[in-house]
Amino acid sequence: MSFLGIALLLAGGIAWTAPRQPRQMSSGDVPMEITLAGPTGLRASVEQLAPAFEAKTGYKIKGTFAASGTIKKRVIDGEPFDVVILLMPIADALASGTVVESSVRPLASVPIALAVKKGAPKPDVSTPEALKNTLLAAKAIAYPHGSPGAASGVSVDDTLNRLGITDQILPKVKQGGIAVVVKGDADFALAFQNEINDPGVDIVGPLPAAVSTPSPMVGTISSHAKNPAAAKALLDYLASPDAKAVYKSKGMIPAN
Image (cartoon, rainbow, N blue to C red; front, side, top):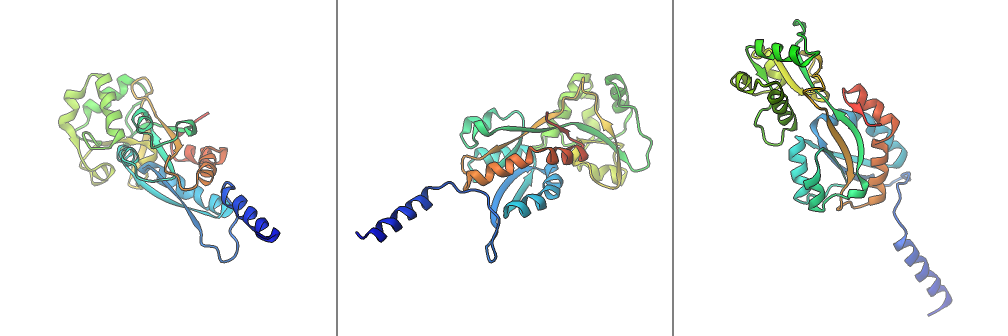
């Protein structure tokens, strides 16, 4: 083999083994995609954050959003995302081997909040006792009790159990979420605060922490990531101060 041939072979080998890094697009490039999966309430934050990340790196974020439990199941079943945002606990996802445990990053916590129809009187939910009295006085309440994949429903169920009023409240539960309150068919809606964005309702406030623990949200790289370096760049961005400011504006509690 000629000296030129050896040089070309070595150059090709180095190019093939070099780690792929996020890069600026050159003219004529087709934008590369980073697939991200996360809970529905994260969509608005990602849509606000995406343009700056995409302009800086040249990578296009392709988001998939659904109920948090649904996303977790799809991840555990091996669907090949690059970056995954999950609500804790995630022991089952880690045990499945479909996410990289060492990549887990805390992003924010998501509180449950109570919403009323826009302009309606705002009840007192500042203490466990006040919340209990407010819920007992309601004629109908909307929240996703028993809905598959609805982590907010699980959280509200836990709050009702802590307050000792589950049996009194369940007969009042209406399905349909925020829309039921907008229509006037329920007095209140209980949901993750970052998912309450209908202009037809007002947020009264988050439930008291003594009976409603905010759900931690973490980001992780999928073990199926097509480009782990690009996935890490996106995850780093989602854990940055700029991202945490957006989470706070959407009703979440940024991680320290």
